[in-house]
Image 1 (cartoon, one colour):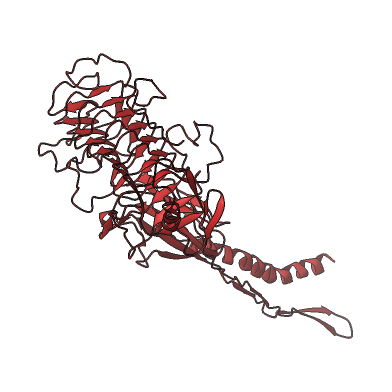
Image 2 (image 1 turned 180 degrees about the vertical axis):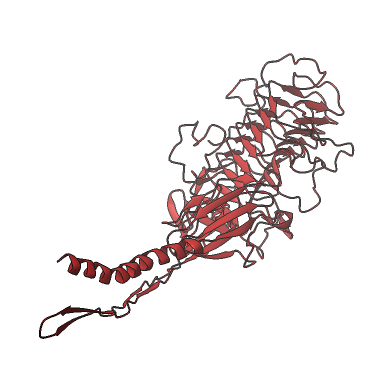
Length: 541
């Protein structure tokens, strides 16, 4: 029995060796096949592109188990994919930065930059691995002879035959392509639908804010008109919108689920991703209405027009159509509240007019941030965030203050209040000033935070440097109680002050060498704050 057991063990060894090799080789082959593909984020000149370095396109094709590495080359971007089961989000970052994700499930996964939305998108195609494993064992014959010496010689032969067994395993993967609209920081998904005064107005293709405004314009051309409300659901893309000569109009998206921060989802603007209604300007060609320069939403010579709870985007189409996100021009009693505004020339602008309120808006990744200009007076800018507004300048700035500033007061703006706002960049060296006064007089700025500005000068003024704050040809401004940190001059040296270039009568502890102001707060602008305030028109909440 012992010899027979040993013989059987010897017979099994070739078969066991085949099984071990068959099990190990595919595993090793799979590991060896794992690759990393590289995608450039931003591209030359801060182009809004994802570029696979192998294909030269926005599509990256890999196998299961491979990885994709995104390398930031320019700008402020993210790579964000939300198509289950492969989801990822790098979060917004400035170059240089890298992010890697390994893909374990076959499929087609569209993704985009959460800052710039669908105009900056790519696709990862993950191919399933088709594996054929064949195990073959060759026949083996063993002969054993035993001889016993007697008068008769007997020979006994034992033959053992192992039969060849072939096993073929085929794995077939079906790839399903799904078109997905991916939510981004100032973007949303869903079919466009619009209500007027809580009654359905339009839905689907052809539904637009411009057409809803045209309906309201038939009734609201006098101060006595009843307030009418246009409500946006989903993502509405269309021609530039102008509200001209209207009274008492509210344009609103769906409120965020959390409104515990004074009616918004955040103290300094909506938390990214919490707004589900979007107004986007479509790519050219589009129809520009009379009185508009192509702004996503422009309010002209109107009274008590409120815009709230909206993602407002894509007024910037390089190089031919670069325009503002929201522009209040020569209007009174308007209110922009809890909006998320991105990918425009100026993000949020007030050109002239009086007694408007801009509160708790997030203005992110535009060429310029939040501005008061062209004689704007008694405008309240409170608790807004101006972040990373340093997209490349695409045309000569109409404002002599230039571009790449956080909070701007320019061209004869007077008696405006900037209170509790945040101006911030991820990285210093890409912008001009966080707070800039250019031919602006008698304004008040307090409680603002300015972080990581400076390093990139503008053409105006000709002696331009950079710093946290700059005052040029501006007088009698109050700049006190603001917090400046991480800001630099054009040579990279720290500059956490308000630099006075020219002007008289300016005061405040943030201005180097200036006297203290005689007040500890900005003067009230609205009669709801003080009976002696200059603004008697009450904006619609």
